[in-house]
Figure 1 (cartoon, each protein chain N blue to C red):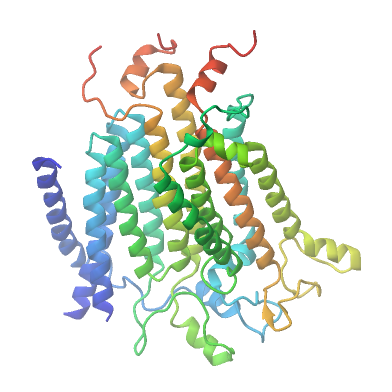
Figure 2: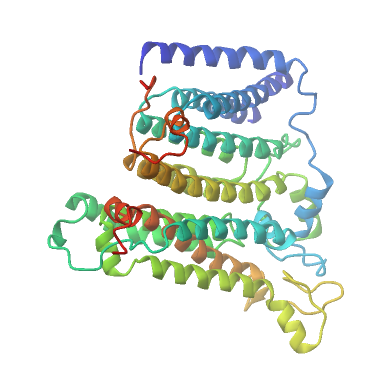
Length: 88
Length: 275
Length: 139
């Protein structure tokens, strides 16, 4: 039914909002990357329910595979934790 | 997760539920989502696979791929140019830096991660490569296409680089120069496929356009839509094959450059190389 | 009742996308760490693409459900093509979003390489410390 598909879309949209807030407010950068990948998974399910299968096939390798790989290499080569106040 | 993070997340959810009630009372208009799509989109849906209008059709049942490579082919040309400039930009920044030493490393067998990770990667490598090639080759019949297959293949190649270490992969042939050559061959294939009907038209004396796929109103020449009853949709199959090749090798090239060891780059930056 | 429920659920999706955009915009200009800014930029560009695909959706026509934009009813006759055009979703936003995702990937890869080079030159990825250094290399 139409209402059921829109209900599933709304549930995953709310899940993506929670994951976005947790990703931005998290101080450990590796955990923030994991939250960003959870948000991308929620978006991939929303794209599938919106009847866009080409976009799902692009979005899953790019946003769940390549972006966390880029960020993990970047974090490994620099610092892992965000500093709140910096003593001068 | 701390207590205040959970509290603010719950407040965000309640805010969304409350604000959307106010929005649904009329702020978005009364036709969202609409019952009928736009006239332009309906024309594209009617013309993508229509054997009765041979002058306007693409002969491919997959409408999104036919919009990307035939109806709006120039958009894809510029997108390929932007991706090419980004990859060449990263190659140019690290010119003169050797990505991995080609000499014999003493503890060659202990490079990389544990045997469990290596065995699992060896099993999933042919599975993922077969899926990626299948997605790319079926791009004109089912959802898929060149870029989808190329990025899936790039994911498994990057996994090989990380699990068996970079030194091992360079020794087995997955070097920066190989990836650069293969990417250039893929881009050459794309650019030749975009003007192939023009070249055929110049040879046989007919008029033809760039990015042409099927015969149009003033140019009776085009690539065949099906061979022996199998649908290949003209230039769409060639575009998908070359795009998969170019994207997979291009993204792997960028990751080879990002994984260069720090000691190598610091010795280039501090000027120890030219003594 | 059914109509209002459908409008309410679409309103939840639209407001949630707006909240995502707001949170990621805040993350870009308020967090001083360069890597956190990059993560917020990916979320912002993904949400903009999701908006574009949401515009292409359509309501269920009376009698059948909406289908994706792939023609599956071989062999084609003119009224099968007409039925397909009145049931499928809009294919144009999907083609444009495909281009936008590829361009976003190119920008993020180039920015990541530049951030690595900034860390090697200045020794930190904190913009407050870098702005105080005013161009001197790291000690």
